[in-house]
Length: 138
Image 1 (tube, rainbow, N blue to C red):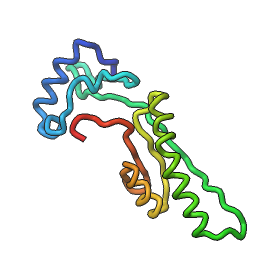
Image 2: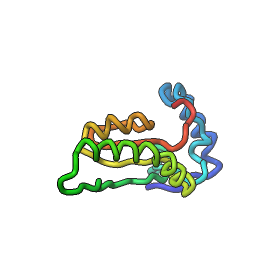
Image 3: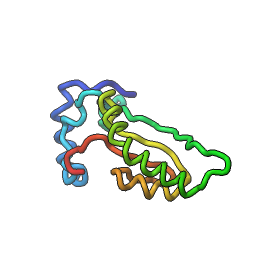
């Protein structure tokens, strides 16, 4: 079962962070569970809490790159690189203004995954991820 966090959960979250070396070393704080545009929840059973979680709104982006018959592939790739480089800051601000906390997407293209790293994305297999704000400890 689960329920929404309440202010009464804050002290127990702080205690649990203190007990977990990794989260403590990463600078986790209870406030992260109560940020705007997030939803803190408690997973629990009849004996009490099992875990505390914070759910953040992210944008899942799907891209279809435009191709034209007979075009030079290298020219198209260069046009894409320049376009992505010039427009990503605008896109990040657009998502942030809408309350999104991150951007994710999927690709099988290792060159695209490598290129997106220049803009703060990290990859997990075929997925690229970028946080739109800096959390403490990251």
